[in-house]
Image (cartoon, rainbow, N blue to C red; front, side, top):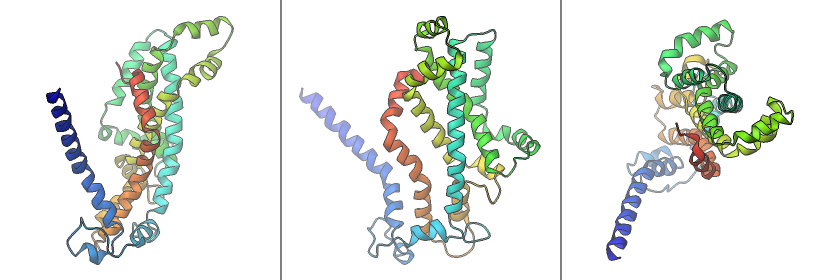
Length: 284
């Protein structure tokens, strides 16, 4: 009994140490994003702000020099919103449909097709850059937010199909067959039977896709132009600027702005994400 209690205390101490280790960078970013630059240059980045203020956040949002004009991160943040919402919606919807077909509507070659879709999940981004650029150019979508939505929808379809297929494999096929006997067609079965039972895996897909698309840099810098680049590209331009004074407080505020949407999603729906994964979404 005493040995068990000692092990619990040791585990607790180890977890607290690791938690502090991982949270220190976040703490440094938060406290220094509210300090004036002169206070940061004083040397103690772990100290709480003496002259607390929101000027770094205001400047990062609407006044910082990102491109030719000092627009701040605001237009790029809105670009990310316009890119993420439709891409997540379409990749989740199409993944649920394809997962349903591959799970409950077997046909000749379905396993080969599923294998090819899975193969697409593991192709490195760098390999598809040139073919994707040619396709976007052919479709006249290069340098547009619509083009980025198309790229992220297609590239995320493999993962969303995998998630939904594995979940639907555990769904009773008898319910689908009974609905067919009663005369229900494909989309009615999908809408009235499958979707109402898909909430946990939909949440998993939304969190997965939102995080991947929001944090993507390579596709954004490769296929976006000055008017369609997402938040991550603008943040890189802000931090990597080689001219003027390095305003670390503005950089910290910008980095926190970029992290807030995905962090909020995890905090709000994290428990559903775990529940969806535990329901069999990643097996196979």
